[in-house]
Image 1 (spheres, rainbow, N blue to C red):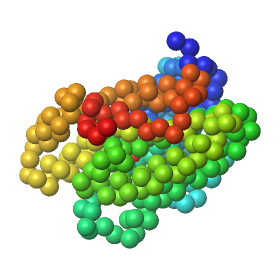
Image 2: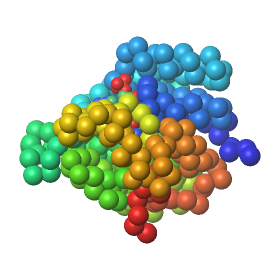
Image 3: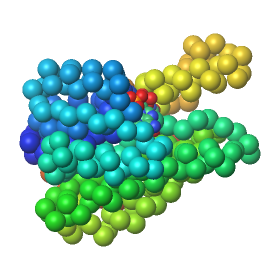
Length: 262
Ligand SMILES: NC(=O)c1ccc[n+]([C@@H]2O[C@H](COP(=O)([O-])OP(=O)(O)OC[C@H]3O[C@@H](n4cnc5c(N)ncnc54)[C@H](OP(=O)(O)O)[C@@H]3O)[C@@H](O)[C@H]2O)c1
């Protein structure tokens, strides 16, 4: 199936690892040119080198911390300077700290809101005018099941990502007539360093072994296992394709049946 992505220019956040890296690989396999963004360093450069070597596509890297208010404008500018007008923006970075919902901290709220809401909103806002004027664009946000079903101890994530979802849902109808779609994916538990770190923290807190925590977590998923990053990346790539041009304003779970609500 031709997804119509060859030659498209994609900016992928959190691209050095996990879900962002898997998405970068999938988009590269469809012939996209890539601007990979994360805080930078060895892992990001290694990802770029591997993708260039494997898919023979142009890959640029951009270092920037999504908790820094100056980052969104810098990333948008550097990505377009390196590769030209951005067609596809994958809004993604790391997750916030875990915390009991009744024990949150104002500074951590500010940091998490910048990471999970303000930076992606500013990034999309910077890229949307160009996408609209060219009559084609894709914004896909990697979110969390917490926007559908709050996750205990991930209060910052549940709340800040819900704000982002509300903004994305607000802009989707405003830009679809210009050929720009705006969607999100809602991961349940996919096998990445982030999920491993959360499991480790839970094991330490409860005095269980890491293996027991993971086994219990997997039993709560009807599919009986954690998902693989590519199982999300494949769907994100579909959302970026020309074939998905009529799909906008949606937030689709990729969760092995974990979210029980309709
Ligand atoms: N995996 C899941 O099942 C799952 C479930 C629900 C939600 N999520 C959310 O989905 C997103 C991606 O998760 P993941 O599992 O792929 O995580 P991951 O494996 O930890 O990867 C996170 C990526 O984001 C980058 N990053 C981290 N902090 C950043 C920052 N402040 N600014 C810019 N980039 C940053 C990291 O690279 P550098 O270290 O190079 O910066 C890395 O490339 C996270 O927000 C996570 O909370 C994941």
